[in-house]
Length: 278
Image (cartoon, rainbow, N blue to C red; front, side, top):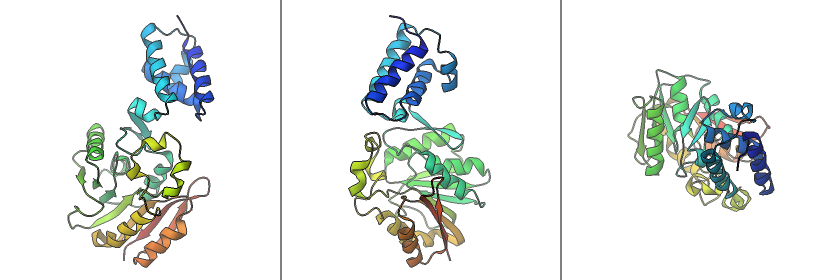
């Protein structure tokens, strides 16, 4: 059986759409480009070319994985985030476009010593260090598997000499030192909201999604200890849930932080919160 690239993508798009997968055409195009080993836009330009047997079989395999709701990033083994490509596995939270706003916010002021709490793939810390060539940073995570992923990304981006990673439950294993920037995308989804998440999201590490409390537990734990590790006037930048701005602001205010500011995303929803130590 022979089939052109264009017709194979069209057939796959229909299958994915019928399965209720949003962005079906984009997913099909990206997965086709991975089979062809070309950029997604090149796959479109090659639409009239015929697939060989091996390519057709491989494309069928990846589409079947997507139909079983395996995230595209898990199929590909990577996710493009900010300005770089990051190796990802099911052991880490899939880097998302909205988290790029955290990087943008953190880069608004210079920093030399960064702490990334719950680093996961290391995408936030490594994106910051790649833009600030004089900075160094530490990423911590409670997951050994996540630390392994972050270290691989640091090596891939030639940042292993400035990015260090260690196993730690928030600050529990962080040596006493002063950072001028602390960043975190902690688990903030309320357990009651998990049933609303897509099957793809639920394939990610649950401990990176929810605190199994009220979605605010991680903010409270971090705020309680953070200033011990912050230089005077150092910044703390969190990603937060769309409705958590006032609640997290109150936690930070109670913990003695100042210059607290909620930053909306492009849709006007709460997305980041920044503050400074005394």
